Length: 427
Ligand code: GDP
Ligand code: IMO
Ligand code: MG
Image (cartoon, rainbow, N blue to C red; front, side):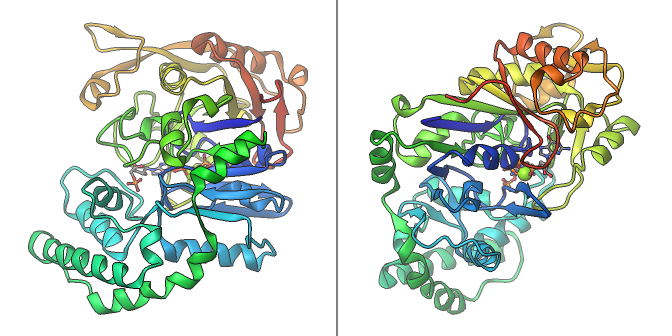
């Protein structure tokens, strides 16, 4: 493995949590590099289902050092809740959770602004309401508060006061809603210094040393390529860079450190929130996928929009991330569907698109061009080796390989950790 970036190749919820958990068995370090508690990464082990929002999924293995990089936006309240939750289930992070001193913080005003902006907007994004966008706004306008500021009470007090005064003006004058209590927030956040201090680290230095020692490192992307603020379907995106490039800036490492990029690709397509979705099936078939695949948001519980596999998107993801291998998830959900449709291009009546245009008004006008493949009826959830997959299931995966010029390395046939077929070992 050495250093592997794992990215979501579609609109998030591809099953990154399951694949990261599976790969982390052999990893020394697992690091989150962007996003925040908008993520919902599900892990099914034995009888237990655990959803992590902020901590890297690798943290569930006691031998793994878990890292939160500078590119992540950290809500200290959510973070402490998640640490405590794991502690209660017997998973102790002492000495093996490292948080970059440069990571920005999510404050109560970010969450409030996220919510009221959505409520009042006529063009909703459908955010998770976790304050992600507003926190990255402050980072970009250079007024953000970072983990390092939590450790200096005077700095924290001054920065909070300035920010809350400004946000209260926004809240009352623009959004016509209640202001926040400045003193109460300051008192609450001044208390975090002692709790956060043991975890704070220069993550870039730690990682570069680990890389020179040959440690196995997995970089866990949250969200997905089409939610990337640059590569995605802007403005219907999140506010960070889930794509492979974000792993470098979000952790303070350079491109030559990376050995492998794995794309997690759901065998069909889903999306939560608003924005274009060319292969969406809003009728009975979409419902069938949602029910069979249990497609409900792991963070917000919202029903996920569902549709056919889109090879235009997969090809695009392969390009913008330099994907070396695919981990194809939820293949079992397609069992019994015959024929299976795969979108191979878009057309708008005037031209055909083979490259993903990533522009909402173009995508809205596009219709998918489908090819049909034969389905399979056999239950594949017990299959553990590639050769034992039904021939049509293998043909479906071969078709994905052909359309994207990227080999399939892992196939997931169920939510549990062992419901996994490894066809090619990861670098
Ligand atoms: P993530 O955000 O990419 O980590 O994905 P989520 O955890 O939000 O959503 C993926 C859902 O699919 C979770 O409920 C997983 O337990 C489940 N899942 C993952 N892989 C498979 C699979 O191969 N088959 C089935 N049926 N479920 C899966
Ligand atoms: P994981 O890591 C799916 C979506 C939201 C919304 C848009 C912006 O579990 O794959 P935000 O709160 O980030 O400002 O919302 O992005 N979104 C996700 N969709 N999976 C996620 O994470 C997501 N994180 C954000 O639904 O459309
Ligand atoms: Mg998710």
